[in-house]
Image (cartoon, rainbow over the protein chains, first blue to last red):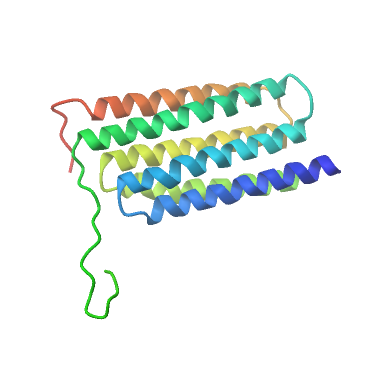
Length: 108
Length: 90
């Protein structure tokens, strides 16, 4: 019973981080700013869900595969984000700049 | 527990469909690559969840191969896009 509660909490935290990452991917204005929420929130969300499923699974050989997937995600997600960012930088994609403020002080 | 895992898988699938918007209408090609990478990560988590919903162990091997393929695809596409002489498709 306690095992199920711990696994459920980890899965809920992971899903929450996935939702935050999706919001950042949709709302950010620029490729360089989009890399920030999506890459990190996805890594943390996936590793959190995998950790919850490992608690749900218990001790077996499948735990080794889950640990391999989590460790590989920690390495590969950072590498993918860096590769996409370097590609965008070398193609001279323009940076996002905030527009001039209006008369009443609100940004555009 | 099975129902809870199914609900988590459904929420993550809905997230993946929302992320597909960025892959479809991203202003630059790098945005599309990023969207495909994010959708792939979410699909990987859904495959791992399906392993425990259906109680079939061999789906974990599918998940491992999927993670490796996702890494190779993203790095190869990025290296291809940053090569000299490549032009943005309008």
